[in-house]
Image (cartoon, rainbow, N blue to C red; front, side, top):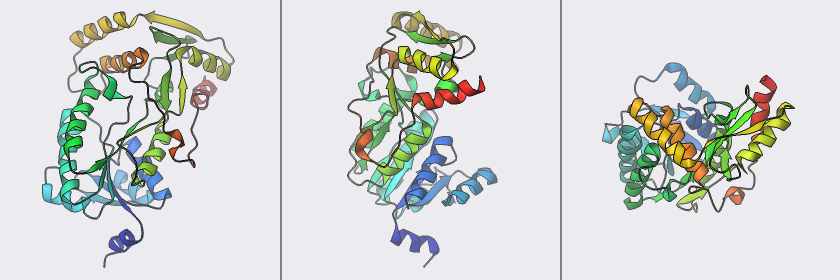
Length: 309
């Protein structure tokens, strides 16, 4: 019997798609730390250093073409859960995930975790967020499949506050918001999301949706935290009403449609618009489901950027 088969008899086998991405790689590491056997799926032609990095984490790496149903089914065989950390547009979130779902069902895998990792898109009107509409479309297919499913909803990645999200403007000492400065917002780091997802993958009793937030804080709270970590006086900057943001989204999308970009500027605007509306607020939170987890605060994340400033 092959070493991988021996390992699978002793501990659960979790299949991870999208393992070469930031979140996917962290999920692989967290699963290995929890004692799982991880089978990381990579596409043919994946850079050797990425596959080597996954092996160094302790995962088995398997190249597979998603269009090869038999090969995809073989990779899933013997798994206790398939986790999708895939990122992309329709051809990935709907089409590729559907192929992965079909393979998991045909291989007899009991559980599936889709690549949702977002605010609560189940509460949003259709058409208010392109990327989340795709997740809703796949969720409808997943709900009809003969497999148990768990979606992890984590709000916004806290890491984006010191990266791509134009909310905390360190050079200007401003925190930008739309609508209500006291609207509670959900934030969870990529690392914490990965650890929670790993725990959920090993939890046979996990429900259809799990909602987490490393911290819930408003724009006003972000201002206070940024002031504390930098020792400088940050102020709020109201960019306008939610209606004005709607107009800005429409204009930006018309001028710069970028239909093949996963995160064009207007997509980020849609996400912020959703969050500041309060509609996709995560509740109740399931943070306490796995008591061993520790949650990074917004202050910890902003402190990194504050120290650089």
